[in-house]
Image (cartoon, rainbow, N blue to C red; front, side, top):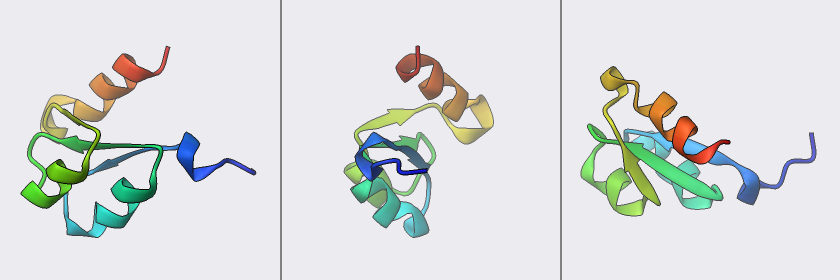
Length: 62
């Protein structure tokens, strides 16, 4: 699809998401993510059980 990784928003909550969060254009952690993911994220949204991904998409995608 020829999409530059810097044009990608990623969402994460656990250790397996660290590389994705680091290399995306914008990395977003959910509120209940492990501390290490939250420290690397560009933003923190609501918990995954509280529609955190949908809330972040609404905030950043217009």
